[in-house]
Image 1 (spheres, rainbow, N blue to C red):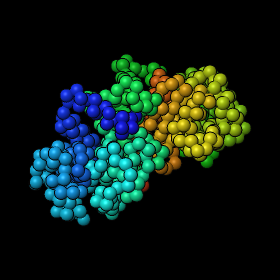
Image 2 (image 1 turned 90 degrees about the vertical axis):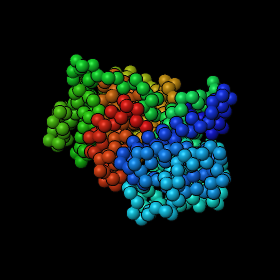
Image 3 (image 1 turned 90 degrees about the horizontal axis):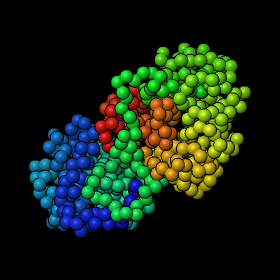
Image 4 (image 1 turned 45 degrees about the vertical axis):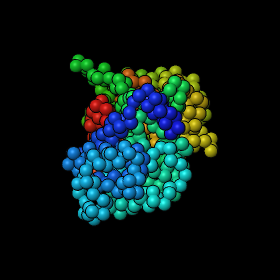
Length: 500
């Protein structure tokens, strides 16, 4: 569920009307934010809280106290003077103590202990319109430190200067790398134009705050481990490779065999028990020589031979190009009874042959277009990303996953439209979508329905990219799609343990 800021405020007021106090909620929110920062930055560095007058600033100060207690160097940048703070926020400043709250200019930002993290506690979700001068100056200082000193910015609930209702970005708005949103995602965070300012979304749960019945958009979901708890089953001790799932991959052609290898490797690392890569003609020698040793590369005269192979799920399209096999591939897409992930050139083939035909397919389908492929599948213009995936899901009867900085997933079954929370700019390189296809195929082969496989797969693929960057010594510039499957193990563990 997602809420507007007004609906979130009403949920809080409902709780307070029942006798709850604000301070315990602030303490839990701030502790959650501090814990979340430690997930991404496990080694203590320097953290500066930018504090406005309201309770958002109090949350930031509690998070700062948590980090101080974990060994971080800390500092505070107040927008006004301490006497202008709301009483509870002033109390949190006093609890932090003067030694842990020196002014920003008291620390050496040219040579800070790394990482350098900035907490945006300037404004809350109800603020609208352009930033007032003092707040804009603070926001621009944060943005300058992010740009010039490689700081990482963490926004609380919503980046200051981003409209929590509409996602409109006002001049001078904070550019956040992470937004820790409290209890429910806010509508503005999921707007199409908000991603560059909101960054990676993380949900800080406060179970005491509950929206009233009928309030909020229950047809939307932010993908988190908590939201999908129980959907990734534990393996029984007597598991064997056949029970783990058989994935068939129809991918790769001369000059584009790398996509097939990426897809196959991701299926292996995603949990498939057996992976078969079907190879025609000139592609076979290359694929056989370069595939992981665990992958069975099967030479075929026709991709129709996959119909006679025992498989639990298909992945169709990465690096396949077009050729005299188009009819064989289209037949599998439209007529095979097994669940199939349809990607890349298979999507282009489907676009040339009326995607609505997919509604009669006997097996479930997951379409994974990037924006260009989406435009070919559905020429609708002027609609939001959410509206477009929902329209295409209804038109085709397939689950639709629209890739991008905020991946969106829609199902014709009536399940909530899901927005992925994980990932980073390092994924903006060729092949990341091929790994997602293989991973989703492995999850589907293991018995997970395609909507949940798409949700879990997008979260795992994005979380793997994060682990590579924040723990694996990889940078966003150096991250390659081949890196992602090697971090799936840590991402799966984090999913089960409830990572942000």
